[in-house]
Image 1 (cartoon, rainbow, N blue to C red):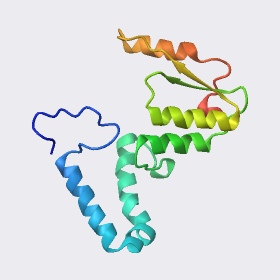
Image 2: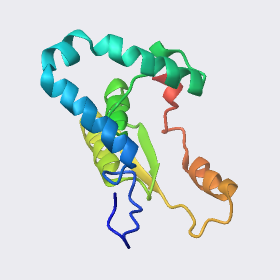
Image 3: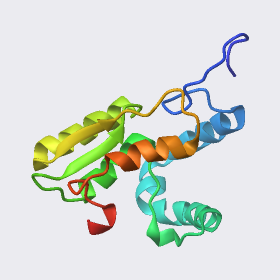
Image 4: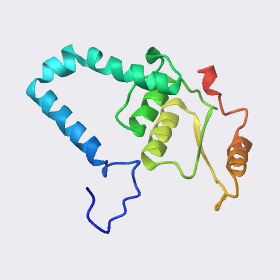
Length: 149
C-alpha cells in the first residue's frame, strides 16, 4: 500500500504492513469495536489459544510456555520486569540496540543498581562469528545468565 517510489525499510517499528495483514487488522478492529467486552474480556482466551497452538507448533514450543506481545519493545519490557537484578549485575547489549529497548534497559539498571553496557560490534562485520565474538567477549562475571533469573 506504499506510495510508488517509497521503499520502507523500518519494518521493526511500525507501519507498512502487507495489504492482507492490514485487512485482517481492520476486520479485528471492527469485531472488537462491535462488542469490546465480549471479544476482549470474555472470549480473549478462546480466540488467542488457536493462534498460540499454531505458533507453538511452528516454534516447537508448548503454547503455555510463551506469550504474545504487540511489539518487541513490549516483549523486552515484559522480560526485564520479570527478572531481578542486583547492584553489581551488568545488562549487556550492542550499540545497535533499538532506542526504546535501550531506555528500558537503562531504567531497569537505575531501579536495581545494575550497570548498563553497550558493546561495539565491528562494522562492517565480516562474519556472524565476528559479531558473536564481540558480544561474547564482553560478557563478564557481572553479566548474569538469564537462566539464573
